[in-house]
Image (cartoon, rainbow, N blue to C red; front, side, top):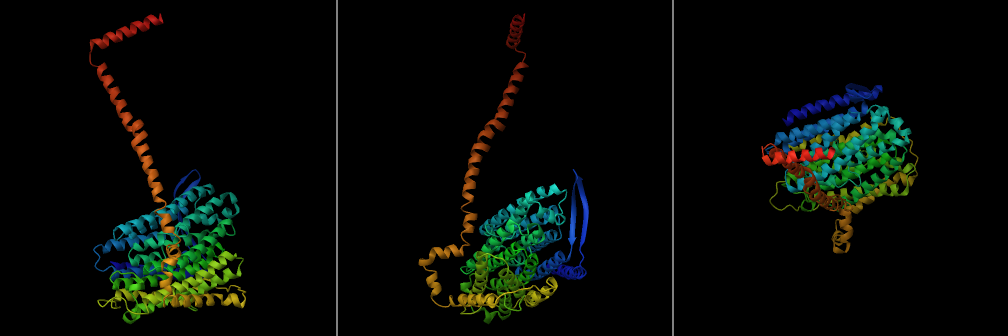
Length: 570
């Protein structure tokens, strides 16, 4: 079944990309709209937008999904619930498609909620306690964004319609509806895991690795970025843009710092995704949605490739994910290591790889603009930290001594696992230049001094040296000692966000809920509600039963009552 689904998605991807080039070349876009119901001058309509942006993103989603399904045929081999897994992945892709081609907030909610629901089912796929906790954290974090979208729908009803693409300029000029921009930004931040909603992204690594490759490249986490790319004209130059710039910068710095202290292979790559999402969000706050979309597409290819390589390593290592127990993989898995290094170099922004064209342009535009010192420093440090944790990952897993023990089966023999990487590896090399010619047909005018122009290369080289050198000698032993224990725990735990999102919040809500349950459901509500109603009905029923009992005492008491009442009246 996975093979037929893969072929269908691959053909759909080719069609969408071809149609996207047609729309881009001719400068056209298509709206397909039909009315479902009309009430109080508001029409609830189902709308589809088919322009170059939605079709190109759709093509990338289908391309990566087809490769992931092909890859799943090897990775999930032997799973008793293989068909269930394929159906869940296809539902996930359908939800993302519904979100991409919808310019209407009500129809966006279908895809938005679909992504949240199916992602929960995929995170808890292995059905253990850790997966259940991660799935609950993922679902509850995303529910905040769902509520924000629902509130945004109610605010949009003031315009008489929910096709927000028609009202972006009006929203921008109407300061009283700034709350609408805030709600959309809040929804996007929860879905794309920006601070303070970042804890669920590494936790979602409990899902199978093919799902991680799909989620972290082109579907769930990119939904928030894509929504803000569409909504950016309404936020341009406003106060929320500055907030987005600072929170995006803080997220990419926090994720880069945390990845340098992480030893779980999948979580390191998840934190690198979080860092790149921070780059996209911050440049959206800077007012450059085309560059954010450019980086979104180029990042999708090499991040899916990186997760696939990690999946092959984990699958061969019998589901062991600690990078300290790997090492020397280049001798046993040359093809996978080659692909993994390609993806890592594209992630670091090596010149003429896919990540370079988008990332370097973003950094140069940020350096050239009116950016504050805090954001500037976060951009610089985050760029260096990206190369630093990449060099650390290469040191621990690819080079060095082999640490897996004598009984190992690490190899590249499975064609189902390695074949789909070829197309993504080609994208990691070529996609950046091709997308730059298509999306940015005219050159940006960049005027920078020699220092700022070479700053990215300097910081990247310094980060690579630091990441590799610090892990060679005894410095890491000193750093991991008790002298720096608090700093290492703070940096490696995403600034305590997982604890703040779970242990510190849940007890207070659970205790309050218990009080309400005892005083409400089992207290006043029970006493004045169901129990009281039952006793009142029983008393009334008993009284009626006695009145119909033909008792002479009751007849005499009734006669005496009427006599006394008549005497009082007269």
